[in-house]
Image (tube, rainbow over all chains, first blue to last red; front, side, top):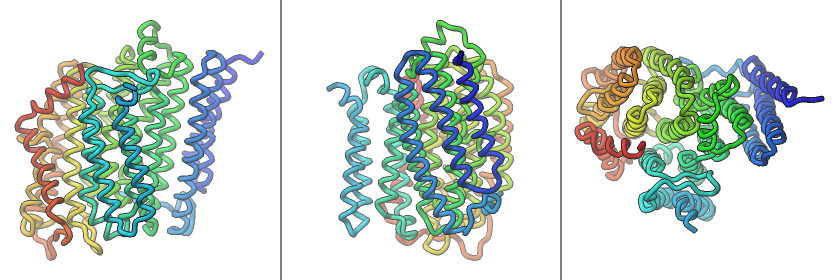
Length: 101
Length: 473
């Protein structure tokens, strides 16, 4: 029998993987973008699990909004990456160190 | 029908924004778009003032709240955006940024902030915050030929998205524990039930997410880079109004939703505020870039704002509201003068660029002096009274050691503000700073009024203080 706690562990692990992906990644900005998407999906999973077990619809409605915002967010993220590539000629994270102090 | 009157200011702003967006497509002269934007801000401001609710109103099934606090903070947010746009006109024009995109994005960001201030539901908080953040990411990246702007945009984007993710994860856990998204009902749940470990974890996630947006240490890494890298008008925008809006969410969540968990969140805020005060003030001393220095100053002021919150009393909350309002007003003056001193080919970037400002423009040097004194907290400027109110509140709440840390770090912090004043008044310079030649009378009058507000509120703080006490009742 799959209990609520198993689902929650799954979403928690997904969330942890995405945070690690953002912090440990030293190569490519696109991987960071993927990690951000994964993080939002972990949150969505959490909302759906709770919505199902609480028998309450508002969690599922929240998920629709998160999905929409995530789409807008990745659109803006990709646009910024294009500007970055045009100006720096690379999207390598390590090479972005112009601002320091 | 009454519901649509309550949400009136937002409807006015959204209508104006869409009109500006569409009319801009057919206009060759972008000055007209600019004046349309300014007039939409004035319409919104008058709508807020005309529609101040008689009593607290919660509409749309408990998702939108309108009370005196939201009216006060909305007025401040709209005024700071108005001042920002007035000061930055020449800069935008010379950098070829005075276009429909910048202006409509700034209006959309303002709409997001107004929704944040009025939200009584976690869904509304998230949507308002994202409307603000997404507009700001685009505004930072708008100067698409600049290397630093692109770099700071990607940093802002990644860390901002991370913060939203942390906030959302906390919200989802709270939803699972309480079974509701409504802040008032969350508060009612925690009065009846003892908080368990999971709810404290969720609370920490929410505070970290909001701490990111406010720029509290250890979530401050994006702030200096974004302040330095973005075009100065965008820095001005980020430095003033969004702080007020994020603070409003902090206030609503902590005082309505989690008031019974005060002991737990006060501990988190104590750590955040001590770190912010110490690191912000000490690292700022080492900075030579003006905007970067102001970023670290913003971090230390975020620490002060959180001190007011963690007192957990009505005096503390009203002191924090007072602090954040006066901080927003003061910062606009400083950035306004930086914008006025920037030219087509030479930007006012480093501290040295301000040397001998007193000789060329004594009046602007004086206005800058008032604003810097206010950030230090020297009487008779308002910064003194704001700091006094916060310190009074935390000593009353029994956190004397925090007051001592706050005072010591403020004294350390006085050094880097005073250094700017020394540069302006006593140092020699080969080519002293010149005012942008297109600075017109309206801009000069606005910045003078803005700076004199700081002085007037410092002499009669009761004007604002009675109001901030009243809205927190």
